Structure formats: structure tokens, C-alpha cells
Length: 480
Image (tube, rainbow, N blue to C red; front, side, top):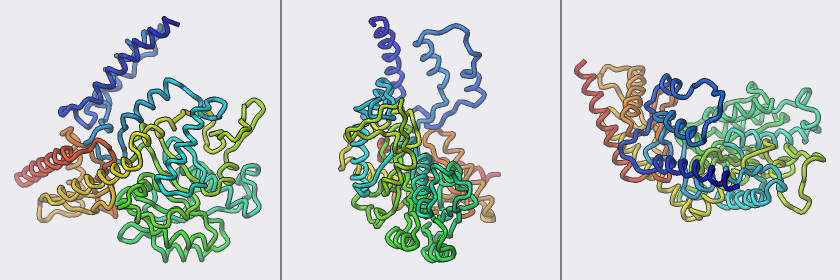
């Protein structure tokens, strides 16, 4: 026992030192990952060793091997995709999650993990202003949250048509169609594939100039096939503009036609925690299911996603499984595996529980509002620079910028290429991390601010960086 304690103490102390070194403020550490693919493979793609190695040697080798290959997405100058950082309490709880090594599939496997998940689920519904009666699942992310919610939708819609999909499968069942907008996220497609619903059954309907699903197009689609089982997927914060569909109008319309309404709120659903932004979600509580991530705006370590379903019976019927070799609690405890697609699973609710406890209601509100303020500042200040254009001013924490080639005769294709080069030059400085996208046929730079550590100092530094990059690149183009 003493030997094991000594071994753990030695290597975990070393891990702590490496972790604190990574987390310590360092103005000179690049946000990007400068190591090349060839370099990382040379360091890490090693022959399988015959003999074992000491854990400290393994850890030190791993840390040196990944040097230059770790993106500083945990820091305050990372604005790519929609990736948050890790709150101190959430990170510490995540470490303990690995230490405790609980299988959070059944109450019997870890009573504490089950109760923490039950409590964190209730807290999340309160923060997001979702129905208290809704069921929930802690999953890896929005991808599996979509899969979880749409499995419940599949069950409910086919049950209305007298078809038991869990027993009979999909062969011979009524076709389920999915109506959504052109702004849907690709994870919806992947969930549809996984569930056997078929991508060809997805109908994408036009969005208005603000990125919102058109009411008239949804009405026409619903009326065109009034008896077809239908899922309507709405957006709460799309990935380009952070646009919100008109839930107060579209949800009653879909419900009038007996459709299941699913809301993709991977990050946008967190706006419900802000009194100043909550109006964007008016009427969303009337949907049938909702998806949101913890590893985005809540700043919980990967992986962390949440699925919520209004129809508890449909949700449980899609996943519950009992067997004689399993120990199912009969005293009103919650067996987590009855609500999600994973059997054995990490006790990821510990980190969520800790994050919410650290922030409290007011802290979550402040995190949402503060990052939205920073996103707006980055977009508007960079957009005011020469040869820059704002394509989307943030209404929450997402915005779009485009950069114009300085040649007066430049084409849209030239502007596309110039935008890509500007993004690459910013990354090369190591000062900030942005990603690109194509929005309505135009290349753009996305600005996504999710990290609790982003400060006004970071914003100033990043805007100065982009200004210098644009000035240098424009000067080079004029001399060529």
C-alpha cells in the first residue's frame, strides 16, 4: 500500500507541476500549435516498447513529445470554433473524476456520482429556464445529445403510428422527415445517420437575412405532408451569426401539425442565463427537446454535453435496459444508463456540478454577458480597420469579419483569398486563434468568445495584432 501511495504521489506531483506550468500566464506562449505534423510524428509515433517504463519517465516523455502541438484553447486569446476553457473548480473536479474512476452507468456503481448528476441536471434546467419536469442526460457533447433527443423523438413519433421501433427496428416503419433551416449544424446530419433516419429525409428550408428559419417556408413544408411523422429542428444560436429562430412563432406552428420540435442550443441556449439576452429564447420552453454543451460556454473540461427531453417516457423507452446481472436500484434512485446511449461511462457530472457551484447564478450570468461584450468589441474594432468588413455583428458571442484585398480592382475571389491569408498570418503570430468559414458564398473569419479568462487586455492585444497584420499585408500587396 505504501509503495502504491509513493508511486502515485510521485507521478501526480509531477503531473501537477506540468499542469501549473501550462496554466500559468505566459505572454510569450503562442496560442497556435507551431509544431509540424512531421515533428509530432517523429516524437510520438514510436515503436511499441517491449519492456515497461517508469510512470515519471512516461509522463515527462509525453509532455516533451507534445510540446508545440497543444493549442492554448484554455487561454483568453482563443476565438476559434466554439470552444471554452476550464474553470478552476471544474478542472479540479475533473481530475478527481479520474482519480475516483467511477462507472457512472448505475446508481449501484457509484451512488455519489448518480446523485451529483441528478442535482446538476436540476440546476441546469433552472439556469436554462427549461421545464422542471424534463428528463436529461449527460453525454459527450452536442453530437450525442442530438442523438439522444432524436432517439426519443423517433420513439414517440413511431409509437403514435403504432410502431415499436425498439423491438421492430426501422425496416417497414413509417418514414420520419426532418425539417430544418440551411443554417443547421452538421451534427444534426450525423445524428440522423446514426439513428437510421437517413439524410435524404432532411429537408433544409430557407433562412431569412438574419439567419432565422422562415415561418412561411416551414408552414408550406408542414402542410405539404400533413400525415408524415415530422421532426422540426430549430436553432438557438447558429455557428456563424449566433442567430435564434423565432420560437414563439415556429414552435406552436410545428405543434399544430403534430411535429416534434428539437432545439439545437449547443451554445446559444446559455443565453437563457442572462436577463439581458433571455428574450432571444422567448417560447423555447415549449419545445420537445433541447441540446446544449458544457464544454462551450459553461467552461467545463471536455467532454460535456447535455440533452433534455420533455417526454420522459419516450426518452427512457429509447435507452432503458435491465438485466439480471446488473444491480438496478429499486428505491427511487436514478440509473443514468436509462437516459443516455452509453453503458459504462465517465462520471462527467462532477465537473458540471463544481462549475455551477463555483459560479452561482450571478456568475453564470456574468460569464455570458462579459464574453458577449468582448466578442462585440473584437468584431467592431477589427471591422473598423482599413480593408476590414463586418459581415455579422455579434448579438451574443459570435461574429463574422471579412478582409478586402487592397487592389481597387480586386474580385470577390481575391477578397476570399485575402481573408484566408489574413487568418493564416494572425495564427502565425501566435497572438490569437481564429478560424474561417464560408457564409453565403463569402469567406469570413469567425469570432467566437467563450473563455472565462478572456479580458479587456486580451481584446486590446488581439486588436493590435490584427491591425499590424493588415497594415503589413496591405503594404506588401501595394508594392507587389
